Structures are given as C-alpha cells and as structure tokens.
Image (cartoon, rainbow, N blue to C red; front, side):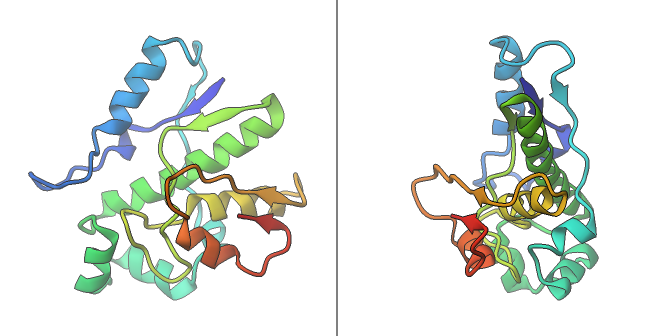
Length: 175
C-alpha cells in the first residue's frame, strides 16, 4: 500500500505548544515497523500548486498565506505561527492527500499520514488547518477527469466545517 509522508509534516513549534506535532513521525515509524507499507511504498508527497489550492480557496487568502500577510487574529485562529515552513508543510500535507487519492484510484487504497485539515475554510484557516486537503483532493481528481462524483468521509468526532463550507452547493461532492 502506498503511504504518503514527508519529514516536512513535522513543523518546528515553540516550546510548550499544545499541538502534538511528533505524531506524524511516530506514525511513520509505526507504519514501517508494522509492515503496513512495503519497500518503495513510502512516498514523498509533492507540494500542491497554487492552481490546485485555488480550486478550493480564495485567491486573496492564498496570497496572504504565502506572503505571510496574515493578521494576528488569523494566525491565532490557525494555531501555528506563520513561517515559510508552515506554508510548505500545508502544501505537502494537501499533496499527500491528492497523491493518496490518485494511488487509491489505481491500486484500491492508499494513505496520507497528514491531512485531515477539515477546518480550513475557503477564505481562512482555523484549528491547525491552513489548506483544506479534502476539498483540494476532491477537486483535483475531478479536474483530472478521473471521477465525476466524490464522497468525503470524515471520521473525526465533529464535522469538518471548512470542508462543508467549501463544497456547499456542489452536487458532485457529498460531505
């Protein structure tokens, strides 16, 4: 099974930050230890492009994120301090979800060890979510002509409010 992971998923955070960033490298170690993916199946995700992000996000929001031109309130709402590494991490986490979707369409199943950024709205991030990987991936596989309809299965204990907002009114995506 192809599993998507990058060391860039692990963002350096200030000491005492409450987000459990080490969970990504711990999960990668566990996946390797348990033989969930075989040799050559651990894939490094590419960073999603601006064009892919813009299928789900407002151009001005993307511009502000990339330039580091977020207000203090926006940074607090996201929960991570802004840095170029935070932007790259967010691009690669979404790239992992796109890659996992493409691999699953070819091979039956795949996994991204990051993602789940369902609190990123079209025009803002929140709850440790910058770019909405589910919406980006859904739109990517549709744009590639690989599927017409998408179901987003979110198994978190609460709804992905950003995913619902971005995909609201789109009859080709069920959330």
